[in-house]
Image 1: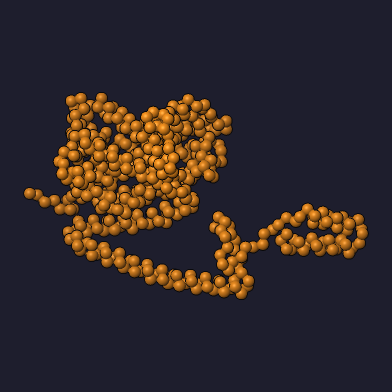
Image 2: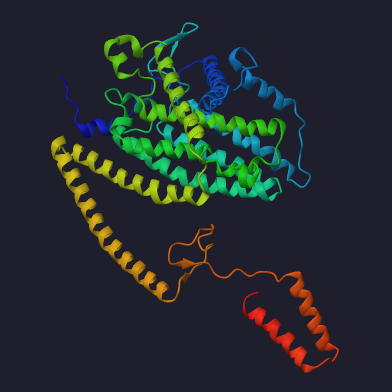
Length: 477
């Protein structure tokens, strides 16, 4: 029996010999299946979202089109195709028409490297043995990130070409949002690459034979779950199309089939990102532990497609659950979450994972690694605790001094709009005097006094009127 060291296992190349040998008709059939799988899953997702949110909000939901309202999504798609197609007069027509296409096509591309089953010739299609995956690449995970980035151009061009303010603001928001959350998403991917030793999706699923990466890399999994909601522009992170302040964001000036393409791209992104989460963190097409333990054939034949689809539906339900539960956050809070919380945590976690993998490759025992990592984490926590104590004492002393000074001066004035949003005064603070417009009676009396001074009725009256006017200006009235 040959024992493979951790270093050899980490540097072992993935086996991609199963791909690239299918006949052309089989490749075309697989591509059609991937497209049909996405479209059917999108239809199911829209109906499920309406049904689940309706159940959460104690209402019925769609129940007219088809049995239990299951054909509501199909009816909506037909309605959008038959609606009047409006083109904005001042828009850049070529880019305006190109943007929905550029936003929708990349959303379909990532499914090409998602494995629905084992990489071996597990199934037979019309007498030809093949793998349940369209293709695989040594850098398949980077291909997924690249296709997600290209979709951002469709959003940006839609907002810019519409020649309108709200779409442009929505496009700028979408750009900043995608850049911010793709960094955190990429860092969560990097931890998976370090642990699996490969960027191939089939090899990553194969490395989860014993334990899913959601259990081995829980921090990476949680970061990805938050990042994928922001990447898909879904509530509560749907700032690029928030109706409260941007009407519909970058989609404001679109109608008919062009709007349908943007809506389709959003839901395809939901399905694709969920499929990536299943592949990288939830064991891919592998059956859950109790089933795979007691049934040897659970991961062979067509059964892996069923396990993959069930896991996919669980993650899509997560999207719906978050939308029906959490309110929309402010844009500054959303960006703070990405840059000041997710990215620093992902960087620290990635360094920790790299350290553990390096120690495993050098032959350290698992117990020794746990002691070293736990000791380092404890030291960092103690240092941060001491720093927080001194910082809290300093801030408390400054606040106490400010309160005393405000109490002595009769109250501290502050600007309620200093942070960009109106806030009420705290104890010891007072609002600055509000400039008020003088009443009509006072204005008429002032005009009369000024007019009397101009006609030469006396310097006394004119001086009094001028003094009264100057007094009002000095008082901020």
